[in-house]
Length: 234
Image (cartoon, rainbow, N blue to C red; front, side, top):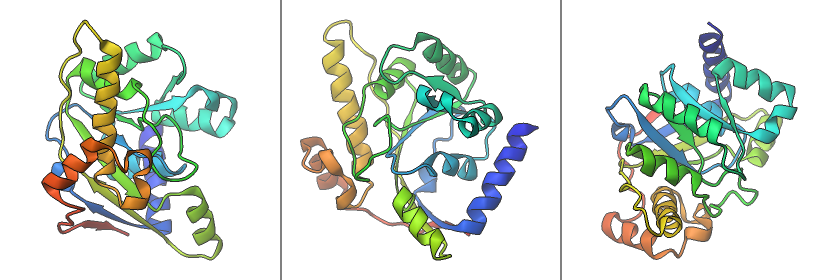
């Protein structure tokens, strides 16, 4: 009951405060379980997931540091989130994530691990690529703009609705990890994941991946952002 009430409140707030344009909804995997990865530029990013995905089994991981804040504890309780230690091997959290994935859940994660202060992509961490390679599930890349904390504050302060844009890319799968050179494999997989995200974003948001050879390959294959007919909310 608390989940549905929480999601209702989220939907009402976004409908009131934002106009959301989503490109690529046709790329959402038609399978029970998958992993969504995106850039992370503001506190509202997580809320978008509950606004757009009509599912009860979303797996949201929350940084351990937020245990100290009452509002975060409340949200984790409402949406059944999982606290995770971003800097150490949090085996208990990983076991719970894999358990929920096997039951058909959808994991949503920002490989950067924290909000980007510059709003452009930071170097991704290997945790997301480890879970993706270990599970073998499809990965849905997402790029978003318009939820930057500074932009949100400025627009709402002047009673302007937020203009949020999301791009959903084609799903892909990472090969299983091999016994040797796992660290090197994970780093390569993380770059692959981050370049998929970067290819969806406008140039100023690509950050440390702007000149990555893999991103250049993606852009050579598909060109810059191809905007099909969007789905507009609000």
